[in-house]
Image: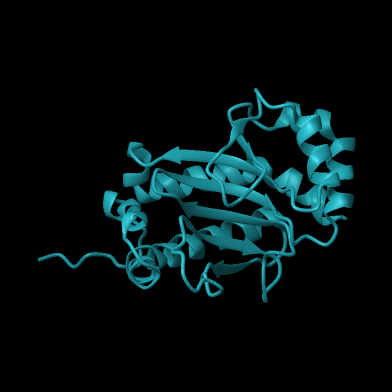
Amino acid sequence: MRRKNVDKFEGFTKKDFDTFTIEGLEDRMEAIQERIQPKFQLIGKTLTEDISALAGDEMFLHIAKHARRTKNPPNDTWLAISANKRGYKKHPHFQVGLFDDHVFIWLAYIYELPNKKEIGHTFLQHIDDIQTKIPKNFVISHDHTKKDASTLGEIDLTKALERFRDVKKAEFLIGQHVAAEDPLLKDGQAFLHFAKNTFEALMPLYKLSINE
């Protein structure tokens, strides 16, 4: 009998998404740790190398621990890749994660960023480049805790970036969503290729922001 290759990401399954229907913090966290985090390690190993090469800088993998939670189980979970070895929330970073109905692939700027205003101002100065160089089907979110997202083609990008710049808790996440039932998620190598291409398209935006 051929031994299964445990070092190769083989895709997400319905069971992974069903994790978020499990009641209780302890039980859901146990399922996240057993089902999803080993896959994040495999995804993260590949994508950290890819993003390091694209960025021209050493990048580091972080896997969400949800350590602050004491009662309510998480509705999503993620890995993050940033240029900071100690953390990612205060830095521009790349994410791959799951809600119960989709996978998200983000370049993320969340509210902990100390220079959010400066980054927002820079993005507004380069808004024409963002609108012409990033695919219109990429989606944008203002809150990493919510599922809601709008495509770049339908959103008022100026208003979104002004809000990100001016509102303390406002966030800016840009990337792609993949529905849980999409066949792409069942092919691990195809998904990794898709994620890498997404981050490659977003890399000019990332490089613009790290100069701030």
